[in-house]
Length: 182
Image 1 (cartoon, rainbow, N blue to C red):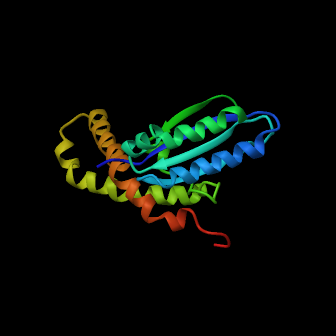
Image 2 (cartoon, rainbow, N blue to C red; image 1 turned 30 degrees about the vertical axis):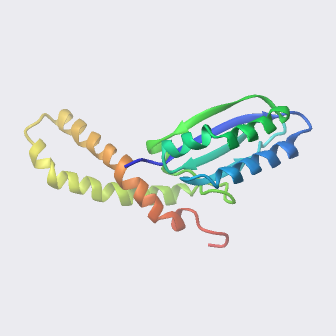
Image 3 (cartoon, helix red, strand yellow; image 1 turned 60 degrees about the vertical axis):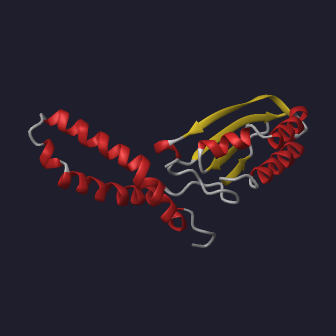
């Protein structure tokens, strides 16, 4: 089963080009939204005038992201950005634990509160740890403490990263990213 992939791009707009730069970025995000596997995008403008813009795009799989990345459509948008931007963009891919709590796509630009993230994490960890202790704990009992702990925590981290948290975050999305006034 493929996991969602998040790509974050950082780039500065040329002086005096911020509005045009952001308009092109929004057009590019709209165009990406018509590609298969697109799950959302967010534009975070700089806090100060000379800082970088951040564009976060989420796709259902690495293959979906690659389809967008290699497309002629994206190439046209990047060409339109060239005269408005300073230097090439810097890209980062997020996966596993770091991508669990990526903020909801536009219009929300704020991650969930730490209390909500802690509660959702506990809702995933508690049953996972309990199940592993019940099912695998007795099999690991003859092992030395540190080896038993290393095996158990490795299994729990893998299960949380690839099975539990992607499903739990999707299920708890209304709780993690409530609308205004909730």
